[in-house]
Image (cartoon, rainbow, N blue to C red; front, top):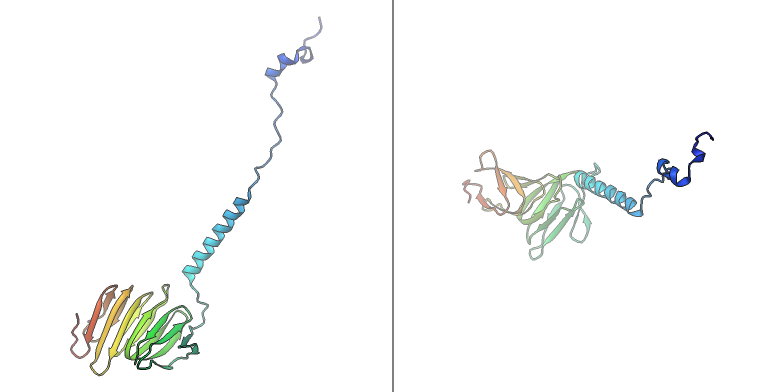
Length: 198
């Protein structure tokens, strides 16, 4: 009798006991959508960083008046008696001086500016991110970030008016105690001499 060996088994008898050779591993191929997804994530992250960091490069803001005349600190800006005078800052902030108004930009910084409203009314729309602006209006000081408001000052009657369209502002001056926060939708009219408001 021949010795028993695997060679004596029929193929069909052997096959149940023999594991088939593993297929060679082929790493899954990443389709083009993987690259598009990665690019999309990178773009979203960069956009978020840009929003948080803002457009500031450390250089002071600049501004232009009317048709594009470059402005400088302490420049006197006046609106004609029958036309508005636009003032546009490099961060996107705008100030529209109403007819007859007079203002000066007293300081330009990398994240905001100081403005003195000498006379008349102005419609202001501040850049919505991180900028801090100070408006000197008669004996009052208005500090705001990312807000839209209308402000007016009449030195003859010592009357200040403020209407907050969006955002909020902190206001200091006669009749306000330490300070007062004016919020969106609120209207303030304050005679400086009496310190009354509503």
